[in-house]
Image (cartoon, rainbow, N blue to C red; front, side):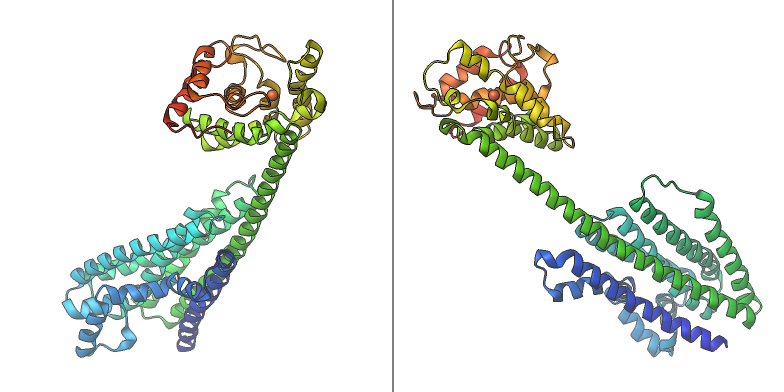
Length: 459
Ligand SMILES: [Fe+2]
């Protein structure tokens, strides 16, 4: 009975690693193939991300093969294959071999962390730290588990004997904690409101470890075969739990990656729609062609230079892209009028911030877009339109767009003139800082201009 169970467990463990390999290969294929990775590379990645294989590689890399040869010469059978077995056979000192094993384990853990991190990084949608943690824990557990049996069969005393007892508890507590951790993390991924139930999280692993510990103790202390049967069955249960956990992880990696992809598609689509809208506005006036896109670019440069986050800088870009959308409501004759505007025409032009903000208010998912359209013609001294806002009352993003807008107006060609020379634009901005423009934003614009030595920033 025991022999059969033990063999089943061994076969099962090998099958488990084959299963892991297939799962990782499938998930990597799903995640990377679109980026043009070759299948051979995926095969290799799946191989090196398998903890047991990495472990085997590490044994070789740390001179394990050399030890294996010596161990064989000393008459230790291959059945006792284990790192401790080799070290022990070579150095004949239980404590020293334990210490050597510890060093090997530390090196192994470092390798596993690096590989796990790389895999986690490439699975872009998935939680990097979770992948790293799962790999790390699993690998440590595999080592402890593999060495445990050999530690006992080597029948050495001292530190190893003590370590083997501790390792039982570490092994099963770790496995089960990890199992529940994975389940909890996955539950949180799919439902953020779900909070952790610590009792459920901690009691099963501890209870399981205690039960296992008792039977394990009877197995080795009293050479009880019956107890060993229970131990083998419990090991079997743990492996099944693990296969399930890994299966759920891989399934989730696929799902989150798919979700991420469609989210990115939607984002690209909305950016394209916004740019198309911007071109539509600019097309109304042949002399403002490209105006919106340029203002958007200058605004983003200003935002970045002013130390705004990359997310805020992106937002300023979109706000600026659509800042003149209200011009859709202004008749073409007025917009294209090359001569000086009459008071009536000017009144019509001045409606575009209001019209624009009304249009953009319809985009409920981006309420911030209104800011640029409504307040880009406000002046720092309060003499602007449509609301006559003053100083810091004007949203910061709108103050940025106002500077970029004026800069582009001066540096683009008009029907009646070519773009202005750089020194002229510079003095305009300098003279209007604090009156028309926010002085801080104007100063930043001057900095950008000073860096633009060859005057490339114009239409
Ligand atoms: Fe405007």
